[in-house]
Length: 358
Ligand SMILES: NC(=O)c1ccc[n+]([C@@H]2O[C@H](COP(=O)([O-])OP(=O)(O)OC[C@H]3O[C@@H](n4cnc5c(N)ncnc54)[C@H](O)[C@@H]3O)[C@@H](O)[C@H]2O)c1
Ligand SMILES: [Zn+2]
Image 1 (tube, rainbow, N blue to C red):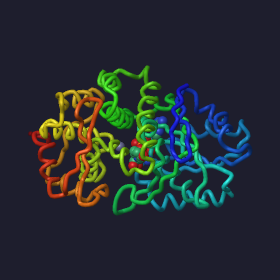
Image 2 (image 1 turned 180 degrees about the vertical axis):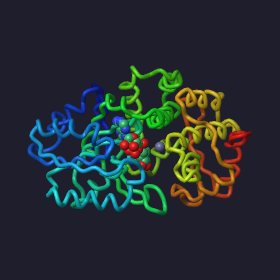
Image 3 (image 1 turned 60 degrees about the vertical axis):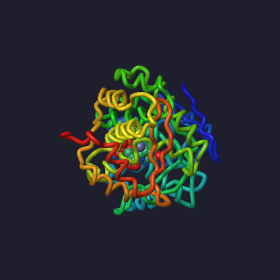
């Protein structure tokens, strides 16, 4: 079992081990009051795969459980579903002594987390990630949110979980593309901070080391979160590939998945770093190769002008500047802030010869 401590206003542990799903009750007992109600919130797919095992384990440890599930996918991450989850908690007589269990990928994690952050002005919650993306990224750090018709993650709160239980055994049922989305974020941590991790992921065949890889990614994320719980400084580094990536995602009307968009965005960031003289070694070729080895795309299927338009709508634009995280080497990046007027030039630099068909 690997344990990673996340230092935040209220520190908590992320446990990574196969078989944790069936031991959820045992570990929850160390954190939540005996006899409390555990409200398991998940999506339909994960409900049919894993909810019964989690609930059985919690009940065996003396918790009462109640459960609800909404249709799988980003389309459920809405104010309407959020309202339904709040009503479910109220109808189930959940109190401040009880807790929410966010079981699933980033969608149940963000949505159930936001419900926990706001129901009765905030109750504790337990994260049990079941996608690689949720394991290495969304279940750690306390960002919770729902989407609005105007954009993704526009309503949310910072609310740290009390505990994260990651059972890599659950990832065996993931569709290949959903698994690859998480690999894109894992490669991101390698480029940010860990060349050995990057090299291992670039090799493609890392299934037997998945526990170690997840724990390493979580430790890197935990380090950034601990230094900057509320996303005002160091945490910006976690946006490597995301400034370009968010533009690709939005331009596609979200047909390109987040992980695929981040993969394209990291290659764009590497190219910008090379052309702006920030890169201290060749970066485009190794980063693109690592992503392609894991079935991820590396070229945006859109014109630069379209992407610039979407990038400038991005909510991360602050004070007339846009922050790009650009790699210097595999394992070290820097923040490159650019006035809005110069954003089109950076995009052209980053995507030159990078769009499809060129
Ligand atoms: N809070 C954060 O810091 C943060 C960080 C990154 C991403 N996110 C959010 O995460 C979301 C994306 O996360 P995601 O890709 O996990 O999405 P998701 O939760 O929709 O999961 C993707 C698909 O995989 C299915 N699934 C989940 N676990 C499975 C399993 N073990 N076996 C088979 N199928 C399974 C789901 O039902 C869904 O259809 C986005 O909404 C994004 O905004 C949040
Ligand atoms: Zn991401």
